[in-house]
Image 1 (cartoon, rainbow, N blue to C red):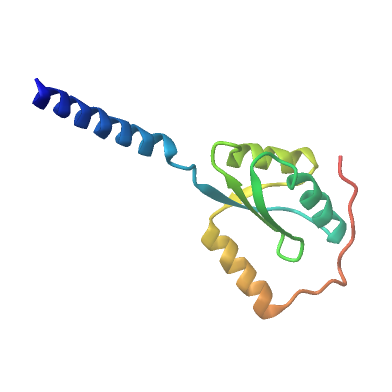
Image 2 (image 1 turned 90 degrees about the horizontal axis):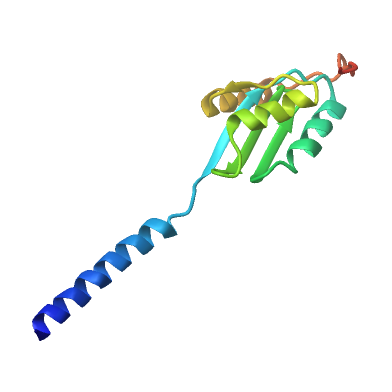
Length: 125
């Protein structure tokens, strides 16, 4: 009888430990990148100020020189699609690109520089 009780306690502890590990797993952060159609620093600020208050957003990089947006967010709190919709809601495009494409664009901008002479803010609908 005592052996059965010890065995049952060990099984219960094992099951308890296994389910605790499953429920304790944290949701990973996700990164999504977009190509956009910003015209100037004001456009960049508009998008940045809007996205920083979206659910789950942990880090945000908006760059009008490269027309890119990088959002790091908590999985389960938001989605790539909802973040794109938020950008669209402000009147800007949000074409999803890979993180590798984003890095390539940023490297090109860094290497070649960016001319600000042609910036002109356009009215959005």
